[in-house]
Length: 261
Length: 223
Image (cartoon, rainbow over all chains, first blue to last red; front, side):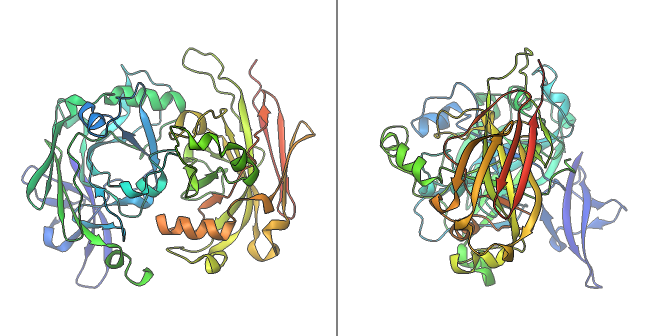
């Protein structure tokens, strides 16, 4: 099943946040069975109470070599704030005066069960489902301290996720899904989850050795080769086979923050 | 998940903000992998599984083979608690966005490198007590007059004057608010003394900050 969260404006001017399901026919249905037109909704991040967001650096061999890094011997994990989250068909901003900001199409694992010290053989039992994520990075801000640092990886709006959450049971082989990114319709990044250095059970085992994982925690599992700069006005589609297509429009910092700019 | 914490949303910690410690490390920061000293505040998260409070007992973790982990250290910091949404605020106005001050303990494994995020060392369960309460922002005239004292089993192990912070609370809040919009209840630990005392199983740790209060924790006894 695919579940999502959307904001709907009703004729009585009330705005409601609804949990919806997306059927095989792609119809968006509320819990009351009402069919919602896609034009009248705003997509929210599919996880209602997001917890800790883990992300992986250099978890695809080809991407590690693209950045001239040796593949890591243990997972390179960093944490992102929930301020980064936004939904499908929303805006992500490019900071003023930077030279290189790129997308990163990633399979995002959502934890559904509290676990600690789980072995990789049992690790999939705590996975609730999957989303597409776009873990944008602003490379100008990299410094060699806790790299990748928060200034690069924890900015408002720079981690769109969605469009929906697909139940883990609906994906037959999560270790063999095609990832594709298109910028303004042109393919710029292609890969497969088969090329992950540390697979999902390994990552869940690794993190749960360190700490308790809770429902709503997420793991963005890294990105393959194919980084390109994106500019305000660009439209970025991140697609993962059998999961969905997550679309983001890049805007300027000024347009994003409006009155807060 | 953690009813005993007063943190909401985020706990952001500032590393390498003790001026003397930075000076001491300055030569090593010219070598790889750092190559140059940090230009921006060095930030890390203590995620929600770490949050706890005054009087919380800190677990002495064992690994999957049931072997106790190597020793932990304790850092103590002034914590600033956000009172209202702070988005791209100027340093001169930053304190207007605060609700007040508190104390943050960071129990972590000893740190040998600052190059990569230290998830293994800093994200153990129940290792970030915050408390005991929030002192309103106008109770403190000047943070520079405050001193952080850490006592372990009653004996003084560290004392740190906040005038020795490389960057102060207002500058940090401003800089961080240009990275991420800060929300009410989020906490920033503004800086720890560079020399972090080691702690052992069964230890009691009491940190006082003048005018703010005393945060007390103990370490689990497993042996």
